[in-house]
Each structure stands twice: as C-alpha cells, then as structure tokens.
Length: 435
Image (tube, rainbow, N blue to C red; front, side):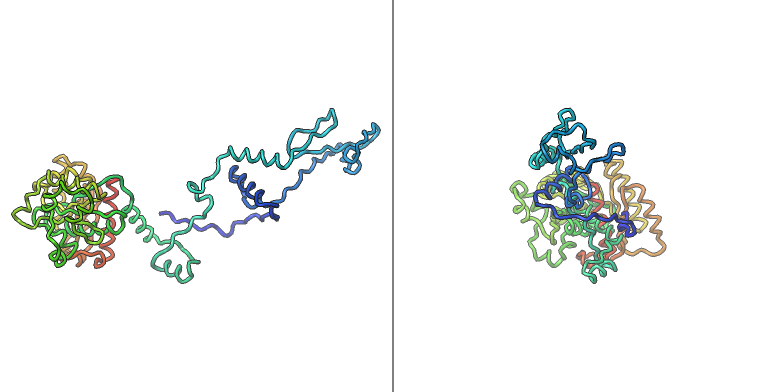
C-alpha cells in the first residue's frame, strides 16, 4: 500500500487577515452556509472578515469633489448651473444604477431584503450532507499502530506521536478486511485430497476457527468423511467430544424435516467457540452410507442459517456423497504435502476435476501444502510449489507446526504465528472466491 507522506512543513502559509467577530450568530451562520453552498475558501476569512464599503473608482480626467461640497447630498436646494464642481455619484452595493436624466438616486435595498435574497439563493443551492459527506467536517484520523516500535512510541507519548501502522500491520488489516467482508447468500467450500494424513482435516479446523475469529457471523463445518472422520475431535479434543452426546450427521438426517429454526438445529451440532460443527458418522457400517441426495439435504438446511460452510470430504473423489458435495461447492481447497507422492496426487485431483465437468472448480481451487511431516532437505519445496502453482488460482504453504502434526486438538493459541498467518491467507482466499 502506498505510504502517505506527511504534509510538508516548509511550505509558506499565507498570513490570515485580521478579523473581527460578526455582529450576530445568524450572520455568521449565513456566511458559513453561503461558503458551503458556493465552495468558496477559506472559511474563517469569509465568516469573520468585516465588510468594507465599496470605494468609488478614481478618475484622472475629472477630479472628485469632496462630499461636503455636494449640495445634493446635504440640502434640498437645486444645483447652480455655474457650479464648477463635478458631483459625486453614489455607487450602491446592489440594485439598479442612478438615473442620470432625473438626477435622483433610487432607494437602496434594506438589510432584510438582501438577507431574503441570499436565503432564497441558498435554498436552491445543493447543501453538503453531514451523513453522506462526513469528510467535509471531520479530519481523517491516522490509524493507530499496534505492536513493534511504532506501537511502543504511540503508547509512550500518549498518542501524540503516531507514525501510523507498519507495512506488516497494513497487510494484516487487509487480510482481516477480506475475511470479514459481508456476503449476500450462503457459500460452501469443500476440502478434499486423494491422500490421507496430509493436513486436510487440520486445515478445515484451522481455517474454520480463523473464519469464526474474524467474521461477524459464525461459520459451519460439516464432516462428510466416509471413513469415520475426526473433524469434531480435532476441534474440541478427544476427551471433551467423548463427554458430549454423540450427535452425528446421521442423527441430523433422521430429523431434518422437523428442524425449522437455528435453535432446533443446534441440538445436532457441536461448538468450538464460534465455529459450529456437524460430526461425521463414527460407525464403520454406516459411515459410507451418506449419499449425494442426503448431503444436498444437509447443505440446503445449513444454507438457511450460515453464510459460510466448510465441508471436510475425506480422501478420494468417487465416494457416494462426493457428487453432491462438488455440485454444491462454490470453491475448493486441495490439500497436499511436500512429499513427492502428495504433490502428484494434488495434481491428479485437479486433473480429474477438470476432466469430469468441474473445470471451473479446478481452475479456481486453492492448493494448500502443509509441511506436516517436515520432509528432509532432499525435497525441493520450491520445485513442488512451482509444479502446482500454475494449475490453480492460488497456492499457500503452511509451515511445519507441532500443533498440527500431532494429529490432536487444533487451537489457534497453540499454533506458531507463521501457521496462523497461513490460515488467515487461506480464509481470505476462500472469501475472495465468493465475491
């Protein structure tokens, strides 16, 4: 973002003319309104400067006779024909000029007449609006720096020294703005991969918690993994999840027709802070029974209450519910790893999507490479990133983090700053794909 330079202190400022207080508040308000209507500047000089009578123009050919010698001004006697002096003509501020044939001066408009004329003109002129044009009346305040040397100086000086936010803080503020933007409608992002154990579920939880942190409306995460997914365990912790009632997506499906409010829906959901979750089926005999039609029923229900939904799809793209998930997805996250096999499978996933009627989803996908296993130095990470970056909308790398690699509870507070930053970038990229 461009850096706005402070106003130069070497520029000469013209001296402000001496001013006197207006005779009344009404006159000052009238002058201010006239200035706002005409766009004239400066405000102070027009509002407070004393009004000086207009001086008659000087003529080199005909000398001006002092007013005291003008008989027409001081008495009612007719003017003598032999008078050598040239009469002085009164120059009125407003109104028609004097009639030279009759020698009489028309009556001048009164102050009330002039005020009425100005009021009529101001009534027809467009006036600034305090609501739609606040910048006309309030100076823009420089953003407050947070953290670092700039933030320390701001605190030490009590706010008198404000250097503004750093470039890093401006980037973070921009990410927050992109994540928290208001959405019209409900959107769904599917998180999938062809290989397990490469950060798919941890990415769903980390990005879901990040969306919940920055957005005004809570997001929803759905576990549609056919292989006994552990989305809720990763968000709540194994111990807390076992203590709660085992509500799963199968329970929700059995009662979906009776749910007519968010309160009724909440009975079948789990909550990790502001992230709302639907648990996958844990019984291996029925975990793979979720069909595309059943998923679409769940998705339709969720769309009535949540503007952002994440669906953890599990591995593979051919299980029963996958066609319904892809049909309702607005964009995709393709999970990958730095191992050669993980990168190849990510590319194979995008190729399969493009060749099976989902070319738009493949082209606009966000590929997330998680350094979960901290591969050896023999692996060329840059080459893998270059291999995948050209076939998707954006590629984001998540650094190695024990809070992700352990396969247990994922909490933002326990993650490294670089990992949290990567999740913010993923969340922003997801919302970018909605608008």
